[in-house]
Length: 224
Image 1 (cartoon, rainbow, N blue to C red):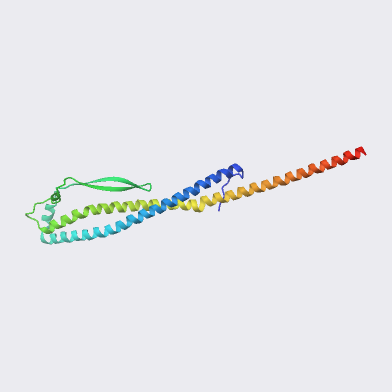
Image 2: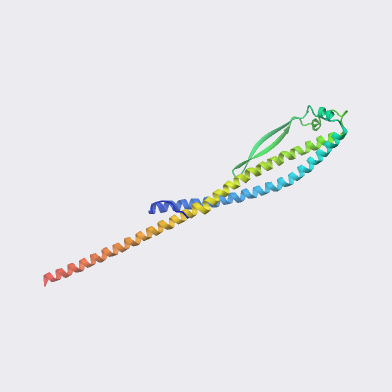
């Protein structure tokens, strides 16, 4: 692993140890965030899978009804019946925070509360098959919006999971090992410098002792 290019001093050692502690804590928090994001993602995907199967089933039913209506009624009659809708759908988009990710929340509002307003035509020139198709389409619309909400949320969570995974890997395999290697190097350098200082002090002490012994001997000779 690469080491940080710093001077091997006690001040730098203290600073890097603090940085290592922060990186280790950040690594733990990011791993927890990644795991929770994965849990939320899998939960959303399970719901989306079940809902997609329901939506596809209901859409297939609506298409069959529309196909039957098309086989009974002329295309011009169907187009004329659906030309001017009575009902209007408004989509209100809000946001919900999941682990620092703002996922969308779709709220559907109808212009009127009258259920019969989904039919934009009179019943004189149309059949029950067209009514059934319109009702099926109206019933599946809310499910389609919920499915869109879930799939968009899953997409955004997947992106955040990938970003978090890269940060975790950068800390785990690059930054933390670099800090650890640098701490070892500085510690070795400081220990080596301390041993060298100890050896020098011992040599100075020995020289001072030798000088004192020599001075005593010289003094004794001068008296004799």
